[in-house]
Length: 226
Image (cartoon, rainbow, N blue to C red; front, side, top):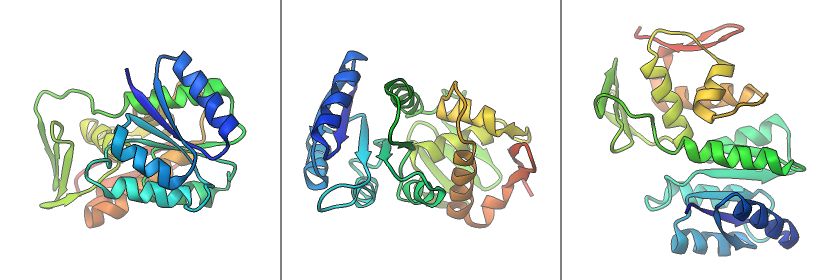
């Protein structure tokens, strides 16, 4: 049974989330502030974290940074829950390592779909070999490690899956809708700017090698060697 840690200071909302998640077959743990949440991450090692952005004492962004900096918890996907829906807020959330971003108020059905989608993409699709080399990119699918021109790069689960998808479809243009479906697991209409934000993060982390990710204006992206 997969465990979801809910870090949310509104007790009624936290309990409602817990009820709906447990009805879907998940085990849940509730933390009502950031410090309690970080202690629960260490103690429980959950499969996914639902994290409110506005927490007493410690912002959700700081909690997310701490989770992603620790070797023990960096692999745990984080879904941020927030009333802030501006583009810059989403960008900040993704920059600190969030795997998804859900704006309050949200429907229970939407959140359950998001949770399932994020958990599905925790691991990459199986490949014929554990090691994939394209240009200066080397992906070890078993160890979940990526090196670019010999330097190891730390990617979030979503960033890893996005890069892996582009590498496995080398030279083929992928539309934003296709990437949302295959990387994020969305089967419903979603803001495709999420894809653009993650592509920007990939390029930044990869340095000069990020130029291999080409924008196909008005459609999507592809990866090709210079």
